[in-house]
Image 1: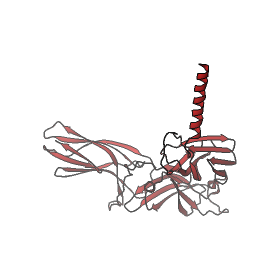
Image 2 (image 1 turned 90 degrees about the vertical axis):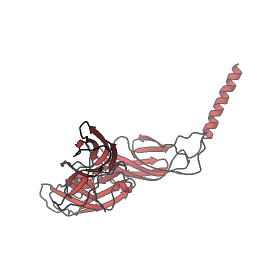
Image 3 (image 1 turned 45 degrees about the vertical axis):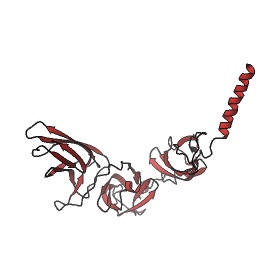
Length: 345
C-alpha cells in the first residue's frame, strides 16, 4: 500500500512538472512602446501607456502586476493560458494605460515593463520645474467642446496669473489615447507685469471631435478631461447661429420617451422624457412642437451664444411634456430629438 501511494504521488508530481514545461509560449506581452502621462500633481502620479502585442494568438484577457522597489518599478503584462487550449498562430494587439500605484517622491526612476526599460526624472517630465511657475503656460479653468456641422470648436478659459495680457498660441499633439493641447504665450524673463491675473477666453477649431478620432482623454496644460462617452450617445450637435441674437440651438440628448394616454375625451397625450445635456451651462430649456397629421415632432434645446464657456460635465434631464391638442383614435408617430416612438390611441 505504501509503495502504491508513493508511486501515485510521483505520478502526480511528474504530471505537474510536464504541464509546466508544456505551458504554451507567449504568456508575456511583447512591449513595443511605453510613454508617461501626468495624471495628478501635488502629489505626483503617473499613467504608463503601454502598447505591443501578445504572440500567443489567444483572446485571453491581459493581466497586470506592479512591484515597486525603491526607484525601480516593475510592471508585468501577461496572459494566464490554459495548457490544454490550442491558440491560432497569430498575434493579439495590446494597448493600455496603467496607473502607477503610489506617488512619486524621488528624482530618478526606472520603469521595467516586461523587456522594455524606460528611465526618467521628474525634471524631464516638467513636474519639479513646472513651466507654470515661469509664466510660460497660463492656468486653465474650463474647457468645452461644441460640435458644428463641419468642425468642432474647442472653447478654453483661464487666467494669465502674473497680469501680463499676452497673445496665446495653441498646439495640438496626439499621443495614443490622449490628445494633448498646449496653450502657451511668449513671455520675456525681464517683463514687468501687474499682480492681478488677466482672464482669457479663446476658441480653437478642430477638424473632428477628439472622441471620433479614438481619443479617450483630453489634456490642456494641467486640465484633464475624459472623452469616453458611449458612441451611441454623442454630444448634442449645435446648429449654425440663428439670426435672432446670434445664438445657436443645442439639442438635448434623449435616452427614453414614454407616452401616457390621459383618460379624457377626446384623449390627450403626455410624454415622459429622460436624457441629458452635454455641458454644465445652466440655461433655460426650450421645447418646440410641430404636428403634421399623425406625426408629432418635439425639439428640446437651449439657445447658447457661440462663444459661451461651459464646464465639461453631463447634467441629467427629465420632464413631462403635455402635447397640445387632442388625439382621435388612430396610430401616431412621435419624434423627440431623433428618438421615435409609436402609440395607438
